[in-house]
Length: 384
Ligand SMILES: C=C1C[C@]23C[C@H]1CC[C@H]2[C@@]12CCC[C@@](C)(C(=O)O1)[C@H]2[C@@H]3C(=O)O
Ligand SMILES: O=C(O)CCC(=O)C(=O)O
Image 1 (cartoon, protein in one colour):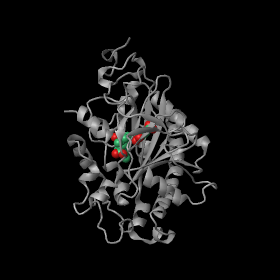
Image 2: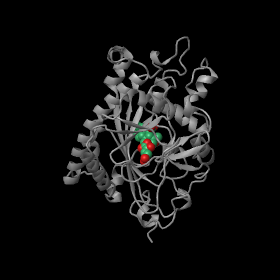
Image 3: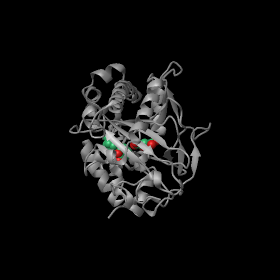
Image 4: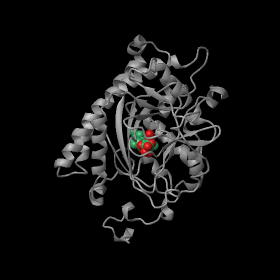
């Protein structure tokens, strides 16, 4: 059996060759909470928002899901299923590149983009059972030359497909932002006319993160992606083939498995949207688990503000007579707070909460309150 030392690149863990889960990849505490099926009828059914003809009032459906779950399945969105199949196929081709090619594009310390574990992994001493690749669609052709320096057919088809996908997704993001703002109670006119809202719509940026979760000989000991909230505004997750995404819900503490619905996106509310909406739409803890027989691929399309813009609660989101619950932060500033939160066991959202906000407002803040699975892991596993 090949071991790490037999590989040309000693930094590359060869998941394909692994016959067992080594201590470096074994996470304690994975089964502290039960897992329930979010695809079955009942209170744990993940909400579905259908943007097609079937939904009479999509803004009301978005409001309910964002307030009660911080996540929902999005169908009827108009992105062709045939394009999604090509996207998944191209991602699989990319992850099948030889290790040395992938390592050429490795993420540097502090870099947002690149190949390897996602940025959050640096907060933990254990390794996740996955590989990832982050890139900016705005810079796609240049970024991808790191993986395919000689360009060629695979490079061209990857870039063509991702550009086509990005075009659809950016338009869908605008549509969903408008629905989110209408869900907050803004009228059509206000969404277009109020300066703060207009600026968000005009400047929102997109980042893509691809995940590959290789099949795993002992899936109960390994973890694909540690529990986290996304830090930006909102994220579209594509997991249309193999399920593995779980949302944290409480009380009682439990993981809700999100069904893999062909052609659907999962939409997650992120921390900056939580702040923007003054906690009315709350960010959601989620994680990805792995399985024994099947590789899994997922894609996150992350929307957020430009790096230098401050995000503060929208005036329209703060109830009359109340003060905003959060202070203004830029995205990089918030990432810095989150890093500190991981090393101290605190909640990043609570760290940017304003002292004047009442306990009630913070307790309403969903992810910021109550049991926090990431903090539980953090106490056990933070890298020294
Ligand atoms: C635009 C983003 C959003 C990032 C950072 C940057 C690029 C990669 C994203 C993720 C993807 C995996 C989980 C996460 C927590 C991570 O570590 O990297 C995400 C993070 C965030 O939502 O904060
Ligand atoms: O693999 C998944 O389903 C989750 C992906 C995710 O949470 C992410 O990329 O942030």
